[in-house]
Length: 199
Image (cartoon, rainbow, N blue to C red; front, side, top):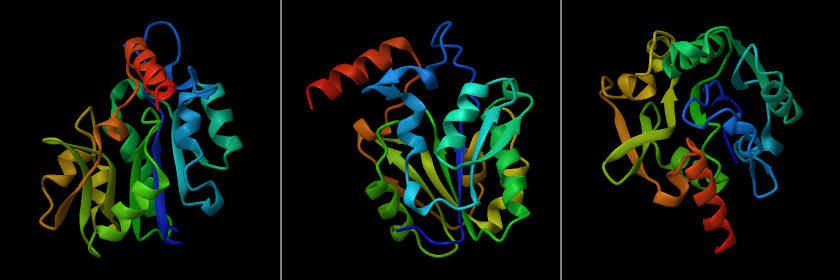
């Protein structure tokens, strides 16, 4: 279960430049689009505080997340990088009563609700937390409302990690390499298909 006032930010504005001509978020993985796996997280707890940032020019992504009852935030300039997407979502959450935000990536299909619940429960009140795979800190990431203004100033490809490193109250939560994998290239998608078939 997740807190009622938790805002969830789903970043789905990537341009798929490393994937080729296809949209990686719409590519099939286990018989459904890559992004559908992340989009279905916490579906039974969906609130208006759960928002997905998608390019204005990606109606199929918009339809995918709308079908899962996400609030759609259009990104007019996805080429500006992940930081710009975070800023759009943070500015939106600042206008709500969200007390914290959980940042997810739509191209991470193997993150589970159990992992996210553990991350939320393990993070002390008022702290920010990032997932850690080996020596790498990455989303999923949790930020208190006190960090929303800093998130709203994100730009370029710096993203949430740049905000996280400047905060005094932070924690890291271990995530398994399998769960931490993202889909950036056709090779990574094919590898994910093979891993799933052998699971």
